[in-house]
Image (cartoon, rainbow, N blue to C red; front, side):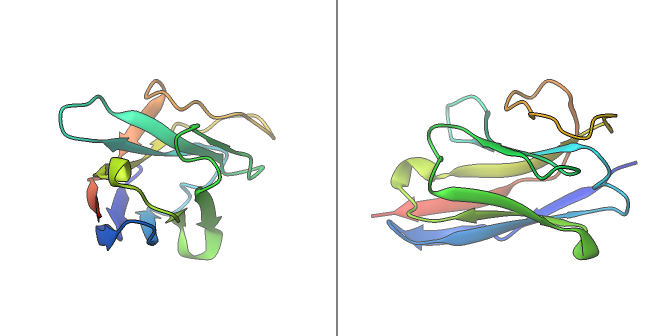
Length: 129
């Protein structure tokens, strides 16, 4: 059973930075897609970043491309989301998620919720001007 614990959210001013962490149970980083999603009040949850743990291939939503970067630390079983140049529209609850293991050496992870079977609790990010 995969367990994910998200942390690192907080309040920041426009243009600031935050790094979110997603601590995973052991052996989670074995050919899975790991994703970061967010949900703003009154809006649907959207996928913003995906990462295939075996190849390190990452994908980003257009809304965060060039500002956010996803990475992993295998030794710590932790996934990160570095968020720079934050904007008020980045204000949301942020979630990390994982798929079941894949059998591929490389994979383009989806930014839809389909296939993400494991979810962490959310961590709130608030960006103020």
